[in-house]
Amino acid sequence: MLKITLETTKSLKGFFLIIGMYEVYNIINLFKTFQGNLILGLVGIIGLIFGILYIYIGIKLNEIMLKSANLIVKCLIAQMVFFVLESLFTFIISAQFSVLVILLIDLCINFYLILNIKRLTKEQPDVNVTM
Picture 1 (tube, one colour):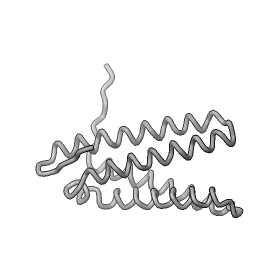
Picture 2 (cartoon, helix red, strand yellow):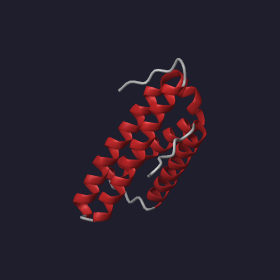
Picture 3 (cartoon, rainbow, N blue to C red):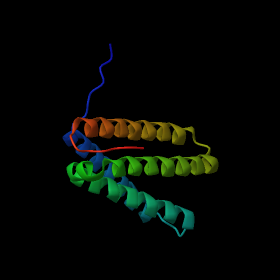
């Protein structure tokens, strides 16, 4: 039988920090090859904002979960919506199947994070999370 590992607050911090730093690193590399494409620049700026936000959530996870865990869930959902739109746009332009595979992986990771945030908030007293 497959056993699903339950994440702790510390491991979720690690997830957010790694994902955020990876996103910031990718956007910095994107801007190195930036050639004035307005859409690419806008996507890069939004991606950079999400990367920095994930790093912030990773650093302040305990405090945010106590004050408003719903904010983390909304952030994850917003990032998922943005990545779906970005991926569909990229797929239309490039017709690369790998874009859809990466999208599926990203959605699974974010869904996993949402489930664990909700589970952890239920385990902590005096914390509300709603959708």
